[in-house]
Amino acid sequence: MVTSIFFTQYDSLPEQVPVHYNGASEVDRWGGKSELFNLPVIGAALWISMTILEKYVHLYNYFKLTTESAKLYYENGR
Image (cartoon, rainbow, N blue to C red; front, side, top):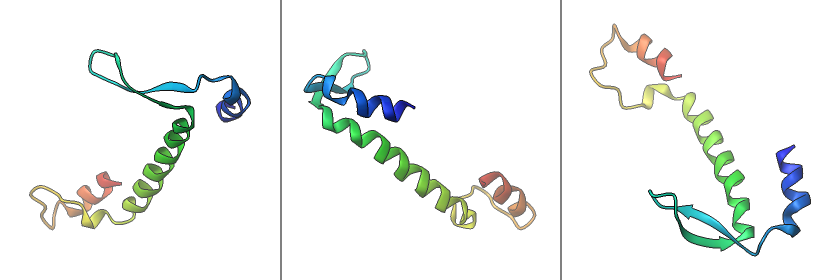
């Protein structure tokens, strides 16, 4: 639903939109409205990479991993 609203209202958006805020919630970078397409791309890339990483929990950097605790760490890693 949000996606359809975005595409139907895209023409009515201003040419310059805020794309970054500082710690005081003030806009410190403006960009073109086409930069709004970056947000779903970044979200999808993160989702795909985390889904793939979930399959290889044995590669994570665990602190004080022992043979007794390995199964618990791997289950929690998922």
